[in-house]
Amino acid sequence: MFLLLALLLAACGGGSGPSAELLAAAQCTGLGLEDLREVFEEVTGFLASIGGTLPPNVTYTAPDYSITMSFGTIAGSVTSPDDISDGIDAGEAATASWNLAGTVAGNGTFTLDRIAAQQFAVSGDGSVVDGACVFNATNVDLDIDLASSLGPVGSFDFNGVTPTGPILGTMTFDGSDTAVVDAIYLGIDVTFTIDLNTFAPGF
Image 1 (cartoon, rainbow, N blue to C red):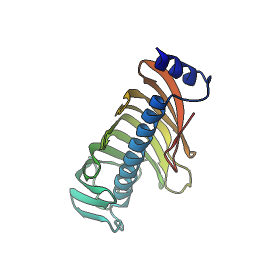
Image 2 (cartoon, rainbow, N blue to C red):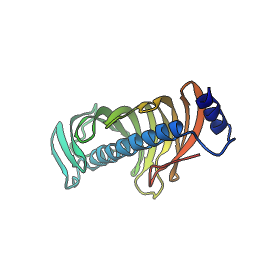
Image 3 (tube, one colour):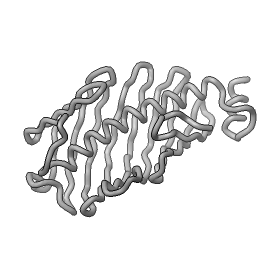
């Protein structure tokens, strides 16, 4: 009963802040987002570079590729309904399946759809496991502009396993350094932010 009351106060903006349990769940969610964002940036960066200069940590012999990362190696393959041997042109798309093995494990698919010269739409899903934290993103719907200093714009649904209980909801991105999380934790609606530089939650 006390935990439910504390969570309700935190969700409504009352009390002195989130409970220790909710804070732990939010920190776990931030860790999962940090891991998935690194995979996202590596995979989409690789796809955008096809037909040009590949990043130095990438090997690619179509359709298979691998990417060496700080916490593991991504391996997968690329498919496309278009001829992308010279790169993904405007109006074309490519999908990369990925499997991450290392201190962080995971898998998923990202589809990169080139809208204009430096503008892309990204869809797909991904799951990462980092210690006791499991983070699953689904219905990814993000727009990125490689010519802009702003981050992605859009949203995705997520669910996670944390040491203090399951959490599920939606993350929204507006190009700033902050993601907004609307979620259900232990049956209670909660809202918090995640700093996209430190991946620390804020209430």
